[in-house]
Length: 523
Image (spheres, rainbow, N blue to C red):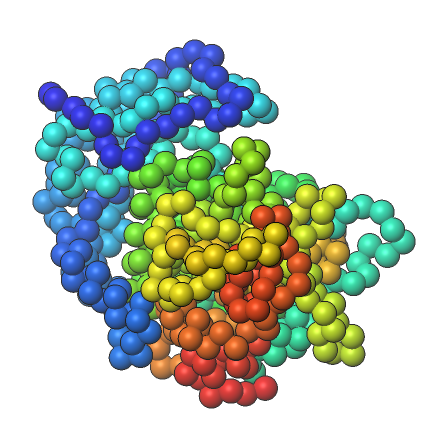
């Protein structure tokens, strides 16, 4: 049977890693096959109305979306037939998510997808991987968008920064989330009737920590539910310096700022397949029905395959059509995003035009008022607000006409997707009081900003008949609804009046934003 390469599926070894031998032919592998949409032109028209900020464009019901834009039944059948021909098991399929999850041995997957899976070692990592593209039979090329999961390298990293050790006051200058809600003038209410989805790629939370944290805050404990994806689960490591810190930060920030909202935490493996499956599971969850998703994980665009970025971007488009807002941290390594080639890089999935990319500031306050807010950049510690210009995504309509200021002060037109869109407190020295694995600590990073904005969106949605969904067009029209950050830099770019590639439009003035999005302003 003739095979040919799947567009955008090429993989290279991680820097510093090399193949040390073939993967065990009997090892079990789980693969997510993403199918193309039906009637994509109709969806494009609906998205275009949302992108223009058309207030008459209403979110679609999930069952209507599946019927119009999910995978075609005959395409699902073709994948089942392909699986049977190669001895692969169909673990599950989901028409709205356009995803079929298959499993089989390494030997079966090698034959089915025209690859040679190997073991890679080096640079402190080990993973099962491949080099080159995935190969598919001719009859599947017009129906398959992506094949993910053959390579199980860690796809993303959490964007949190812990406060440096030392000093006599381990928590001085830090904020409890409700203090930030007051400083950022969040509208009244606790997000009743809303569900905030949180995507996690490792670690877990302990119920006793959640109860102790909210008890100490004097805030009603929110309902928190764990949802397992692709075999992952809520599995706290017991190490407060591990991924448990990310999970606790996300839950505690979102829950403290929107305590009446339900929180659903989607745990998935840290692979390209796991990350995408967690997002699509959340977006299309007809039971929990999230109206906003918080994502604090990502990696530089250069670390992703084209097929994975395309599939994730399409998942965010699905979210926009369904009225679900996606909040994503922009990264903690400044304009390089941690890539050491001397060039500028932005973090994905924050760089998707359908993500509300959340950058970082350093916030100072006194007597309940903000006294100063600058770009977060702690210099010697290596942490700074992620931001810059995408090399993958085109300039979205709401960013047309914006200007880009580099660190030298040179101003030029923004010609591609600029990151971030908005910002909030992220400096670990002015960070967030949280509880992780029985310990109280302070954590910062843009990881904290995504759940902060998600909680704000949940509060705003609670006062609307329909969720705000794709907020970008209205936010950019009402740029003055954010606190403009005009001081500081993130390495390659400088803050400036209006939008900039360090802090976007600025940090939230929640009451002004609620008014701009069509909710009566309250305080």
